[in-house]
Image (cartoon, rainbow, N blue to C red; front, side, top):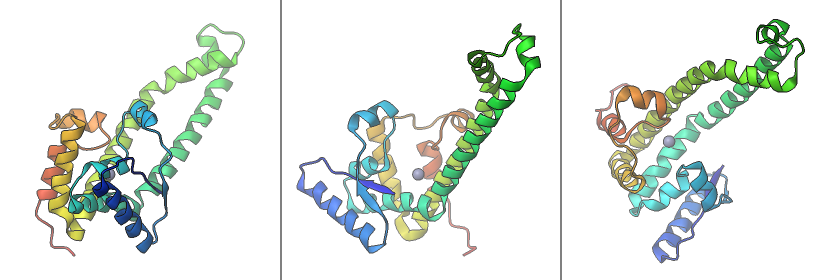
Length: 208
Ligand SMILES: [Zn+2]
């Protein structure tokens, strides 16, 4: 589900909103008016896709960024992430049940009874190492998805405008541009600009 919003009074931006809505309608893509407040975005510390779209002032770049987002949809990335989160939640509840029911674990920490709160604290400390591993794996997958979505936009012929759009977004975000590959692989869900541009610039494989 895509959310569209335009708080600008610039006629050019309002025109873009109409263009994007038309594009969504033509392609049968569901969308609604955005319900997220600016404050919520500020707190999450992330730029939602629709905001990224508004930051690109050039028509081609806007379409290129949308092509990237539609790549996520077309390649089922959204569904994958949704299922992954459900499985992780299930595992967390299952893990907590195991810890809560383990008499030995409570006893080894000096508790003869099994209070719920202590169980929760023990569980939190047990899963920390696992959480690091899971977040690393999720970042690995998410980064692969970003490259795939970029490749999708490139395949549609938006390689050059996507390149320009990404550079413009980087300028507005002021985020790190060329991070150490090991650091970014562990900490970032999106590959840094230099890695993305390098992937876009790679010559196409002649398989299709
Ligand atoms: Zn993306």
